[in-house]
Image 1 (spheres, helix red, strand yellow):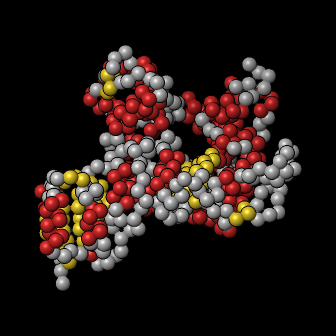
Image 2 (spheres, helix red, strand yellow; image 1 turned 120 degrees about the vertical axis):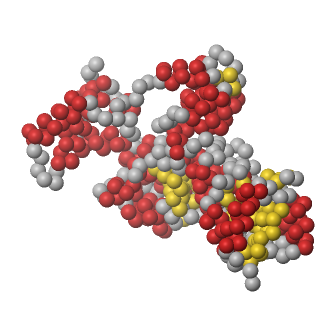
Image 3 (tube, rainbow, N blue to C red; image 1 turned 60 degrees about the vertical axis):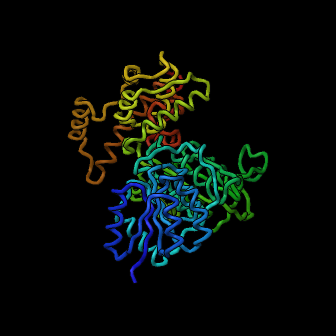
Length: 470
């Protein structure tokens, strides 16, 4: 028996392409372009799967699906939408839809899903309805659609998620979205930045400590795991966690129990773990800096958050959102001209969404007109600090070649010897410039303070030696 599909799509060209692809897979397809037409066909015929657009000629296809689900509870529904926002993805999944495909979609993937649905592959569990208007995850690019779809897949399970992406792409926003839209909504969401905690305190920060566990521990203190109990613990910059803390974290994830520093009691914990990093963990695993078994425990569901330069078309809606946000925070109300928006889209935004947000806030503050035009954007772009050259200056390159010829490091030690020779004067320069202030030196170098302190120890550099210099 041929499989029967109902296609509800008001774009004739898209409907023709989908119909042809389904018919190639032995489907009999009936088509309509409205809610009324859909209801008429459902009343007169039976189907193995329904594919429906969201915006139809006579209404919102998602809202109208409630009646369909009530009358045909076993009919798998695949939703197609050009309104490619996280809110649409969540609304689609909230209906109990079998699958959600943002436009443009991969036709092969769509046909594969239709076949699976028609053959009884089973529909997704319905999600709790949640208004997502306040979430700052914005973007209709295909890259962001992939992110939205991954978010909807992990909302109502407790699988561990590892969010990968450059700094400034919004990794914590994705973690918050998973928590706020999922089963643990209303429970604690605790975020901890592994790179911002001193090496000697990270275990206490995560697992808590007993009174007297170390100097200054004047009372028992609950750690982040206990604070997040019942909710979600977001471990940001997991790649900067020291090895000894990685070991304890792995043990906690494997056993579901923790032990406070200085304590003997095993404490059961119920937390969902979401981790994130802007670092490439593969070479760190190869070098023995990051535990491979911890990586596999964290990366059950990896979500790759794209850099802004790979999100074609997302800059303008993000910029307009930040202008509205800036106005709510007391800055002047500003518009954005089409030419200005085009110029913004053409920029590389190496600092990603965070850099764009700060730039837009500055534009809202400094613009002399109600509408920010292309000239204002060009001026602000020209006023930005020049970025460091991506290629070493010829003089430095020559000096490095001279050093290699003179020193001739032994085989197997070339990389590490050259790195040490380069790093030591660099760190000494940073300490000299900041009079030995390690926090300011780390900021000057563009690394976190824990990394600086570790490298100073490895290179045997005493920051106190620079504390009295101007």
